[in-house]
Amino acid sequence: MPVYSKKVMDHFMNPRNVGVIENPDGYGKVGNPVCGDLMEMYIRVEKDIIKDIKFKTFGCGSAIATSSMVTELALGKTVDEALEITRKDVAEELDGLPPQKMHCSNLAADALHAAINDYKKKKK
Ligand code: FES
Image (cartoon, rainbow, N blue to C red):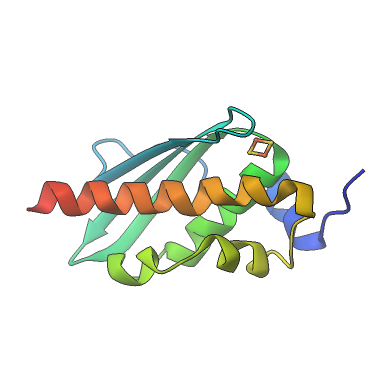
């Protein structure tokens, strides 16, 4: 059994910002090739600042915890700042993930970046 930090358990049991934003300014969907899990991310942006962010994850507990954490990290940041959030940042903010679960944390940052890139594409 992998050992999870308190923060991972907290975000897994009480995930923040779960849901959907209708007509989002940016939308990203990524799949995890390792396990087949799926994550969707929605952002509402005003003046390049992320004002609202929601996610839906069809994945494991670590995927839920990392998505929840990434939404907290991204909220209130500019889109360019949020693009700088790395997979490593997310895992570190959660006080680490078991090594066999690190691949799950990739999904959250990737979905966020996909949503931001979608926003940037639409803006052009
Ligand atoms: Fe699929 Fe964790 S096992 S994201």
